[in-house]
Amino acid sequence: MTLGPDPLRGQSAGYGGRGFALNGNLLGVSSMMMWAAGFPAAEMLLQTWPPLTLITARFATAVPVMILLWLWLDGHRQVLGANWARALWVGGIGFGGGTYLILLAQVLTDPVTVALIASCAPLVGAVLEFLAKTRRLSWRLGLGVVASIAGGVVATNALEPGQIGLGAVCAVGATILFTWASMVTARDFPTLSSIGRGTITLTGGLIAITAAGLIGLGLGHDLMPRAPIDQGQIGMLLIYACLALGLSQVLFVASIGKLGVTVASFHINTAPFYVMIIMVVLGAGWNWMQALGAGIVALGVVLAQSGERA
Image (cartoon, rainbow, N blue to C red; front, side, top):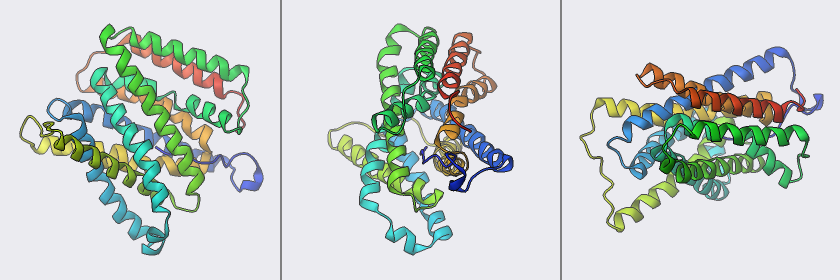
């Protein structure tokens, strides 16, 4: 997911209107529902796929499709004229490293907890904006941070103690990398379309993950799936790659274009609820501690953003 500039700071930006905002919110909801679907799909694939192999297959499946769509929609001149060197560096570190960390966090915890920690992305973004001197600290933001930390503690109390530490660190690290890369993408590629910005940085992620896989093979790690790949696994991979990575990325970028980064990022906080509902439909039990933690995190984000305009 990429974060872009906030277009709702004034009428001079050319944005406004309830219908415009409604369309942006629908795009945000659709993006998060697709992104959430990737967590249960990954949970099933991780039963037989090593994490690095799964991440490589995810990028290798999604990125070629996105490049073809970009060529078809915007033409080869915009594709060839983009700043690929910068994009590959940002995407490799932010989206390649972030995707691997978030999958490793899921291995150590569970899909809902990972989505819960990732829902703090707007608060991470606020801190990064403050460090970049584009946002002022407020008491609402401080309360939001405290509430989000409390919600994470409540949610992780439902897990085994040995699963919390490293898994939570990986999820927090992934959230920071994603948010940083998203902000840089919005800053350095403002002239590209939504599909262009989403594709060019994910290509960097593909190259970084592929390089990591080759290094793993060179070191003698077994990266082959532990069971034959059947149609069910292919279907889960298509959901995890094309839906939860490719299409979700494009829709979220489009939502940012209509709502701005602050309002669009709020939709990230609905992801834990979507993941929990999907897991319940698939037969998992309802976890009240995680539900309570998700509610506290949502309260923290509302507090942190209650002073924002529009």
